[in-house]
Length: 302
Ligand code: ATR
Image (cartoon, rainbow, N blue to C red; front, top):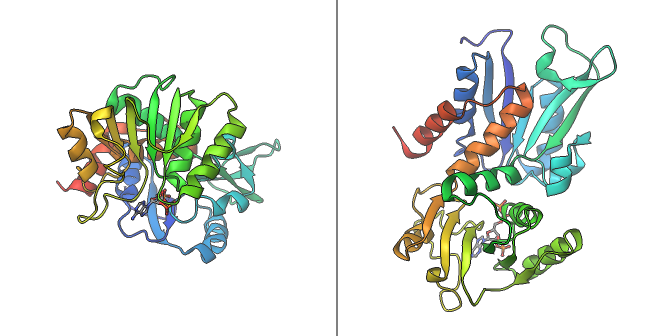
C-alpha cells in the first residue's frame, strides 16, 4: 500500500536503534492485515525521550515501542499506565488515545478523519508475557510453576523476567548478576511482592529446569559464557534460553546443546512482544507467521 495522506504511523524509539528488527516485523504485520500503516525507527537519546513522546503525540502517531534506554524512564512520562506496565515496572509499548464523544478514552487508531483533542499516552508492557510465551512455545515449558530456574542478569530484561517468573510461582529462582547488589535489590523486591517466592542470589548446587540469559554477554563474537564455569555446569540444566537472538547460536546455546540441554534463542520473545504491541494498537490478532518470516529474514538474511 502506497504511503499517502491517510497513512498512520507507529515507531520504535531507542538509542542505539540502527540494528532494530522491529520495523521489518511490524511493517510485515501491517501489510498482512491490509492496514495503510507504517512503522519507523528513531534514534532518540534519553534526554530527548520526553520531546520524542510529545512529538509523536502531536503528529497523531498510533503508538510507539520503546527500547534501551527508555523503558524505565517512560514510566514517569506517560499519562496513564496499564496494569501490565505497573506490574512489571517497565514500558515497552505506548498507545495514544483520545476521548470519544461519550467521554471514553479510545485508541487513536479508531479515530480516522478528525484530529481529536486531548490525546493521552498510555504505557503497556508486552515483554513479560512474551518471555513466558516463548518458553512455552520454544522449550515446551507449559507451566513455570514449581520449576527451578537460574536467571543470569538483573538489568532491564532480567528484572522483568524475574518478576514474571515469580508471578508464575516458580519453585526456586536463582539470580546471578555481575553487579551483585543489583541481584540482591531485585531479590528483595521479589520477596516483598511475592512473599511465598523462594529467591536465592547465587548459583544452584543441584539440578535446574532452566537457565535464562538476560545479560548482554553473547552479543559479541569474543564474549565468553555469561556464568562462572567453576560454580555452575550446564549439565545441571534441562534447558537453556538465551534472550540474545543475534547471533542465532550464542556461545551459551552452543555449550547448552553440547551439554544435552533443550535450547532456544530470543527471537520468539522479540516476535511475541511485537505481536502484543500490534494487538494493543489496532485491536486485531497479530499475523504471527508473516511477522516471524520478516523477522527471520531481517535478522538472519534471506
Ligand atoms: P537490558 O535492558 O538489555 O537488560 P541492561 O539493563 O543494561 O540491558 O542490562 C544488561 C545486563 O547485562 C546486566 O545484567 C549487566 O550486568 P551489570 O548489572 O553488572 O551491569 C549484564 N552485563 C553486561 N555486560 C556484562 C559483562 N561484560 N559481564 C557480565 N554481565 C554483563
